[in-house]
Length: 369
Image (tube, rainbow, N blue to C red; front, top):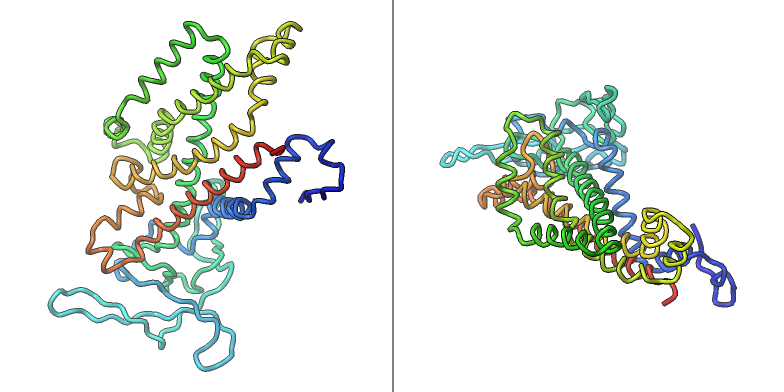
């Protein structure tokens, strides 16, 4: 890790812009911590199959609405190291016929690290059965964050939902970034009729009400399409509007820079216009683009969560944070199983982490200040 030089050091005089940005960013402790949290979330997304204790779509009707189980490291009343969770006993209310689960210390469920459990397809490439933390006997109840109405493990579903929700923000912003840079750069550099045509398109897209638009487009998706296709379509829909604000910002930056001496010199040297835009103008405000992109990712995550929560986004069996929060729409369900709100906490953590990281990058964008 680079260390910020002292005031007596002359490294500042020869440091590149990216070095100065890094030194200033590392002094923003909250932004650095947020970056670590984001890396951790993407680590969970990449290795979700191994980190999840069970199959996220495995139904177990006998264990529906199980409350979260606590991990015990030692045998009760002794110092013998034996990681385990307690099983449950239940009683049925004679009036409502609702099961009430009570932790039973007499029922021991041994757990371990890197346990061989249910098989899965790792990244869709090969079959494996190792889980980071799971019950030694895969038939035993093991629900660290409780279960839902179908007896599915809430923790496993949140872990697998991290992959979809975090990647949809990253992929969606990548598409918006490409469209915004290309169309905004062309609009600002060439001006004239091209600029007018692109800006009218931007204004048309920004004037459209987003929720009815998404509802109409989502309703047009055939029901027989596989979940992967639906995922790609929802990502494209989220990117349809997201690129317009970036295109406006890029257009303004390009219009301000195209009259600078270094751009005029490149044009007089016979440099092609495409290279002038991509190698001269865009790198001049690359730090701003990075900050804007970082702040746009949480907007994509919130949009996907909201659409899936309303039932017009991703649909089961796809697992995302928004799909999981649909389980908590009923107030009675929340009252009896509040642990179903855990996906909302992960949404808050991810959005705050991206916002703090974006603030740090934006402050570091001007290293001479």
